[in-house]
Image 1 (cartoon, rainbow, N blue to C red):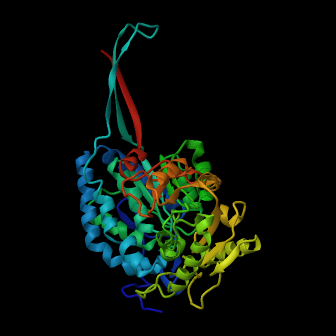
Image 2: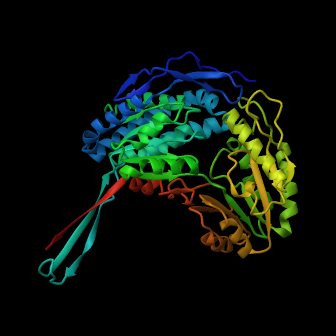
Image 3: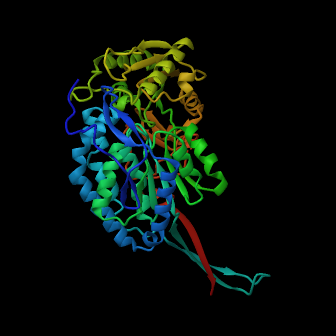
Length: 490
């Protein structure tokens, strides 16, 4: 396997608490999914460490909340500048933690959009709104008059940002930037599989000059510290990206204190293909399930609902493309399919595939374990699927595509909506107006037409068990705020 430079497995890592780098009583190993070698030893935060991060964020809240928005924006702009300079040097570390291929690591994990996510919030935005005056008749509440009102956006308070392992830095940025812009203080709790790059981000936060306690970082291998964070009455909001099952537990743990939540959860992305769809274009998009971080992305088009007239053509073309994708060492530039993040995840995906075959699906290709030292699963295609199959209803979070036939738009929409998830869907059709009409009928928070490229500022989030709330752009600012209405009688 290729060598990964500039990583010292013996480097001492610490938590960021109240502006200070703090040691913990223990550490745990972070493993490279590509080679199974140890990348480093992350701080294994305890319940006491979680409580310390909450206390630091709470103490910093009044000062940061009262900091003028223009000054908050200037600090976010400064952080963006630091990231443009420093983040490219983190590629090897983040790649080693996540198992991402070089292209994904350099363009999606620590690429320019990481800095841009902070820079877009560096210009303060006025979200306050005046309501039109209303003539109010005399009543038991008071005399007649003209009632005026304004609504203000206030920060929620202390926000716990709990992120997923697939894109650790970018996922943090999507939470931290709007939360800070709105005047909240934050605790970042990255996924246990790949926390080291996030600790590097903490170094950039300190270098940019954020006041102590505005941003804190807690890393941990277990659930106790995370549970303490969620259950704390001093945490006003939890922003979580991850599985629907964990999201439900977070909601339950925070229910006693009515903790606000923003949830971006699981998905089983449906791609509806009409009989006049461009098969080659669709195949290119579907192949992203295999080549884009080995399917470890919740928005991937993993559930293809194809018109029966082009079904065989689609399946055969996908089979051919799957065989052309190089599976192997993620540090080699021509590798397209890298490893899954852990042995546990690889075993889960393999069990998922076996369940599909046992349930009646046809294994067209893949399903095997490549002869490589890391946690690899070959690009897998399951055909002849039906809506009642486990592999159609649940998320694999791996390089697995399932294909179902349909005989018309109504049936395709019914199949697509027959799911507990509704995060991201796709429509491929020769007639864009028809594609738009189909999209409007899909129970999905986001739908892309003849493309898999998302708009960076469009509201992002899911229907049903795929989440609660929306982030990105203006919706991201609103998500990290409370609305206060003030009225008066003129």
